[in-house]
Image 1: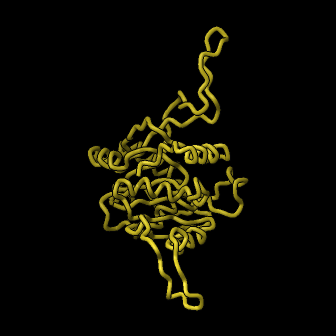
Image 2: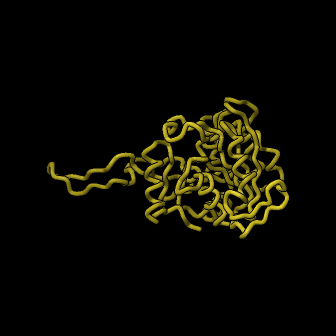
Image 3: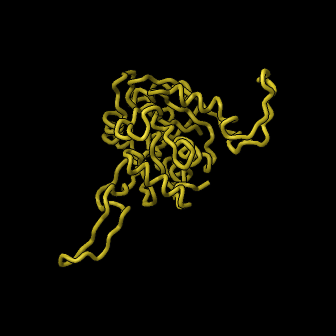
Length: 260
């Protein structure tokens, strides 16, 4: 099974963290958040990835072209780049990564449509965003999707509040939770699975096609979208505060998404 990761957005609300990197390359604990997402999939045996590139996609290409040297000690004979000796084997040596340019300004639906050719021989495939982390077991989502027999499955999450939650009685605080789960409704947390044959009935060639605005509601209307409720940790890195939360968790050894 392949995992498609949408990596083309500009991440305008987190640009003050870095003006030079595409959002999926933003560092969490010294590794791009994209790497963390891929490790979540790899922990479930999904190691064949399709990255939908857009804004500064060349930087993501460079990262993977130089992955061996970035993540390994090596000895090089200057003047002869063919003589490079790597001193250990990287854990990700079995990963297969397809880096596909899907347009600088393309919307999410358009990006998925443009990688259709890489999914022709698949029965099902995973799809997620390049900025969200969760402690979810991908195998559980895939099993749920196959059992339901629908065109698509989305993982529903209750997002972590961006503000501390205060519980009080008679104007006296009884608890304060800095990173509480919101008490509101469920949202799409990414980590989706789709039927690789049926999904294209809901997509078409249009740079402005927003996957969440047209294809997904159409699946809902046709009763072709199942939901996998997930109550565990999930956090989308959308603001500088969330970037800091994720880094603090990793640095303190308390990263719930580290399931590998």
